[in-house]
Structure formats: C-alpha cells, structure tokens
Amino acid sequence: MAVVVRHELAGCEGFRVESPQGLLGWVEETWLGSAGEPAALAVRTIDGRDGLLLADEVESVLRESELLVMRPESRLLELDLPRVEASSNGLAASWRTTGELLEPPDPPGVLARAQLAVRPWRLAPPRSPGADPPFWQALIGMYVALAVIVGVMIGLCFLLARLVSGNAV
Image (cartoon, rainbow, N blue to C red; front, side, top):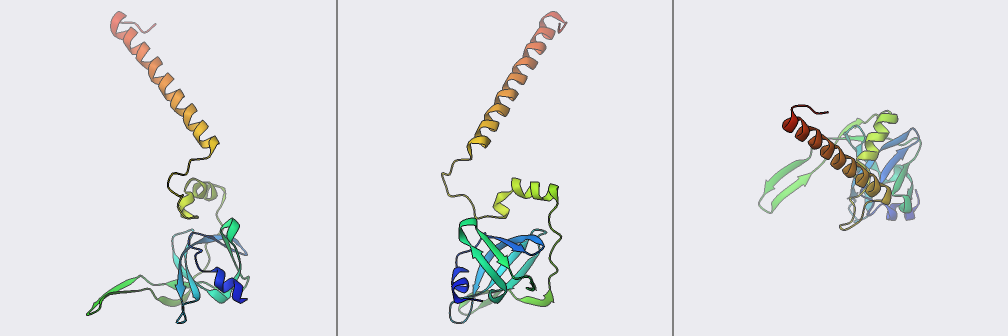
C-alpha cells in the first residue's frame, strides 16, 4: 500500500466501505498506530457487526465520493465488545479483535438498499447544521402536507354536514 493512501485514512469516518462483492458498511473510526499514523479502521457492516480493517488492506480512498475500497483479497477481523477500565489515571477504553475473521454480509438487495437510502446517516457523516434538504424532498414534503390538509378539510366538511343534517350527502 502506498504511503499516500495510509495518510488519506485519517479523517475518513463515515465513508462507505466497498468490497469486491459490493457495499460492506461504513468507517466508524480510524485507529492510530504507535507512531500516530492511521493503522486500521473500525468498520460497521450493513448488518450491524463491527470489524477491523487493517490499513494495508485498503486499495483506495476516494474523498470526493466519501468511498473507501478494500483490496480483493482483504479480510475483516471481528471486533469484541468495547471495554472500559478504571485506573488511578482515570478511565481507559479499549476495543480488541476476537481473532476471528468476519465474513462479509451479503450485498444489500433492492429493499435493503432502499432502506439504506432512507437512512443516509448510516453510510455517511451527518449533515452539517443548517444544511437544507434537496429541492425534490422539500417539494414532496409540501405536496404531502397539502394533501393531508385538503383531506382533513374534506373530512371535516362531511362530519359537519352529518352532525347538522344527520345525513352526509
């Protein structure tokens, strides 16, 4: 792996992780080595499991697409539950691998990909505060709100007619 790619691993939290089989998950955090350089990535798979991807197993980082691509022969190590230990210096948190290989989840089907599209925060960093939704979402929201208001008004008119005359027609 090139040194440039290792350097680019810093700050890629929230990037999508693609394997040769397709979408694998997203980067939760970057783990640093003893020299302070990125050594591994904690990855949350699309089925909710946690794994560790070593920096040498990364093929490329596409910052503009927020995408990280794994090498074809790369492997994901299973992460154990995080641990917190109290000591005289305060708290120490650690996260270790179980030593087992984590089988990649099946690529998402049409329905699962649609669910991931509805929950984009699962695959990308959160939106910056004050960011407006896309125009098409705002337009659909307006039409839905208008349809609900018109439906409620029509329902109230029929209810009022039924209460006054005893007949809704």
